Image 1 (cartoon, one colour):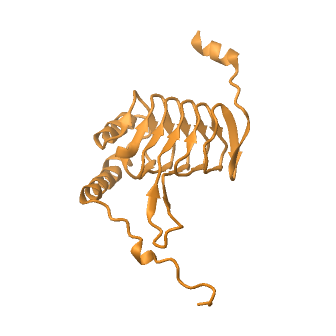
Image 2: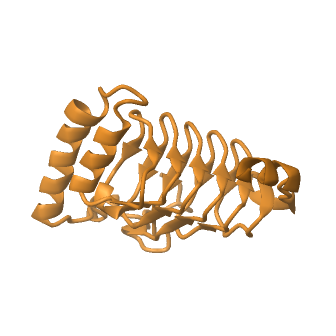
Image 3: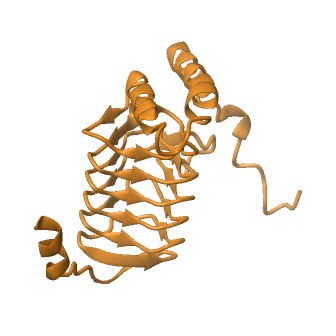
Length: 196
């Protein structure tokens, strides 16, 4: 090893110790996901998936569409609003609460990650912070949203963006790192047509 690179990090001591009840809950959920959640048909199986998620502690307001290939680490750390959609192969890595408000869409292959490591600590322990997706948002395909991020109501996050800080409401945002681009304007005539 080079002289200017002595060991400062000791990953042997970075093991996060989980209570037995959490390990059991995760084990039961993994079995339920594999046997009872994942094999269900996309649309007609949705009421069953919502029922199953509620049994494992997810708060579902009204009804939502959760794709059967969506991976959820801890369903008891998930809250989903009425009319929202979680798409194909979305990964919800939720050591902390992930809340998705009403009429929001999280598109395919997106990754909502509440966990990280404290890289200033020589043991690099696991840490976590909640994620909040506001109402009427659209998180487009393959977006990464990091710990502690709030996406404001009505925001649009462009495909393959990397979101590591809060994004403002009713704004189109995109990029790596994700940045606000322009206001999101919804056509009034389209709204009027849906209300008649």
